[in-house]
Length: 121
Image 1 (cartoon, rainbow, N blue to C red):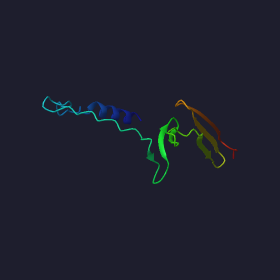
Image 2: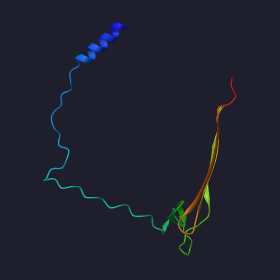
Image 3: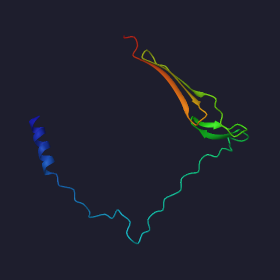
Image 4: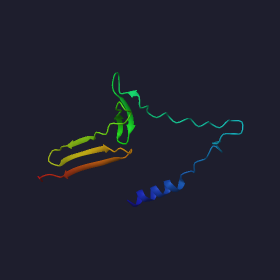
């Protein structure tokens, strides 16, 4: 073990330093024009159909929402349900609901339950 440690110390101390190739230019010179900033992507239009022949949609506080005939957004609650399973060691349940409000806000509620480890063998 001492021989291995001594050999390791000798190898580390005798390693030659890395030699650099020289300075590298990383900034644009005065003859190169600076890149122009790009414009942001346009927002999702409220008249964009949801697929061929689908109802128009717009971005709401809970994601894409259907647009009513009077131009306002649908305010139906929507969400998701999760599930998980395992072989004697993992269980998972979960769900989330988002309710859009009239003033552009939203109420989000989510619940979850986990269980790790099962019966011992």
